Image (tube, rainbow, N blue to C red; front, side, top):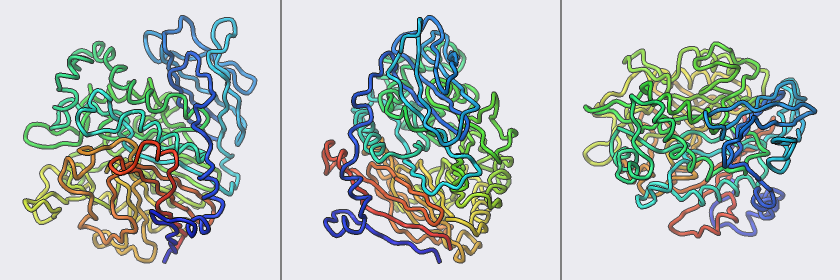
Length: 529
């Protein structure tokens, strides 16, 4: 049985400091906000991703640029490629870099003038190397538009940015934002009535129209810009980021009733999601072991299925379960069969110490939502139940879940861990049974990373009437029952173990200033079986 040491609880003092040693001292003396002192110049935002030999940089500027800005890196100068028609959004794809190095970046305009202060970005170690440590910052549901603050769905952008900066103060090697970067639901249910269909949206932004793609493109920056630029800005300039998409990034909640079934996304909403990614945040770069034949792969990048490969220490598999979702009953899937085969091959391969899975829709818990892995639904007594059918739910989704659990538990190297988002909560547990599948010899650890952005009705109990509960299909031993508060997860990975540090902030009982002093309220140490 994997060992699991529970080091810290909320409200600890000197004893906790002694247990955590150097970590606690590092946290207490964390660096000031990353933006401090950096001259962003003409930049509105910059977000970049990396492999061991390649960088993909995306940026926007306050005003359109009349000619392509140039990026100077590793002795080469690369002209930007425009991502929009006006010249505000640009991207640079830099290949052939040396692994495991901090590369200086200089952004140049006409006559070689700097458009922003130079900064650096590190490539990951060579895939054949054996690094001893990796630190990740993980969170979910960081989106939300300040136009809708009168409705208790989202924290203001300034709060989300403050939480992000606190996470960055612990110097992660990479940042992973797991889904729901954009909230502007257009047609399905109460969230659409509050967002895209609201009088505020129509008056301040306009109305998206499926028959007018150019019109929609003009509205997109008014919707997405405040949800990306105001949260991230240039704070992540020196750390690779990975953005995984989920339901709201397709401009809908996962909703199914007699009037609408929102997924798989229709073409015009899929176009909105792809355009948002093209402008604001990087796609996934290919890594060894990832085939070019995966769906939604082109121009040398993967849009919704990707991996973070860190030497022989970690491979983190990330996959969107919305875009390729099918509605074919027992044969239905969340992610495409080609993606399932890729995941299975990576889990079977033993060239890395740990293979961690990150689907956009998490296993472990249910909130009675339609497009979950599980058939649990909210009954008349406001309790989750499997005794009545969940309308439009597909049994094939659960079958694919069990195939995934079987592949994870069968890997007898490293920590069997799945980190999910979507459920707007912080949680941790261990799955010991999934249906008829006995996992006790190598239980699957599951975690919810915490949400930067949710508030009030944005939590499951606010909109759905229940906090997330262990799914009835599982034997799930909870180490942290789902907490509906804001926060993030810091994961420290070594060859021997993965240590998860959970951070939480409660807007009802804590001040915004308290964010700057957040310490982990719980620490879980996971070791292989």
